[in-house]
Image 1 (tube, helix red, strand yellow):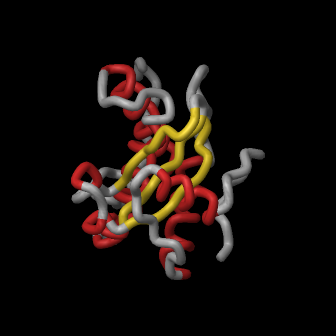
Image 2: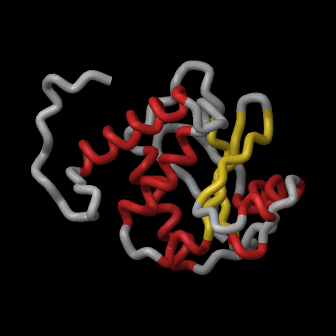
Amino acid sequence: MKDFKFKGGQVFLTYGETCAIAEACGIIPIEEPSEIRRKQIQGIITRCMMHYVPASGESKLLGVYLYKDWEQMEALRNTYGYALEVTDDGCIIGLSESLFDCDMQVHHDLVFLHETAHLSEMNHGDDFQLRYNRLEFDYLYYNHVHMDGGKMPKPDRKGWKM
């Protein structure tokens, strides 16, 4: 099994190590994702982390794993993604097999960005919302993506205050 990676120098834990951490926290990961899922997840990581700049004091993303939400504890059922703080300064992100029922790449990416925003704030408070909004804006701006998944003209960022 090939491990996930992204450009920028940060090295993830191996997929097996990430799964072992998830299991120790009561999550049942998919130990051998299909080649299609592996490529989809690697694509998500590559697209979303390409312009990601960690905020001061933010946890590090240590790894990404895949899980079946319907096989999990109650808190993880019907979730597309889950950020799990596993050290004082590190998190792993799980993506649900159900996420891929939707064929919109932008949807996959925005779920991953939502979980990435948890690297700075584990709850859904104002600080989290601000971080997510910035990540989402930068992603949509850079990729010229309209929320319906179609391309749109590059927006004029002048006058935007964040």
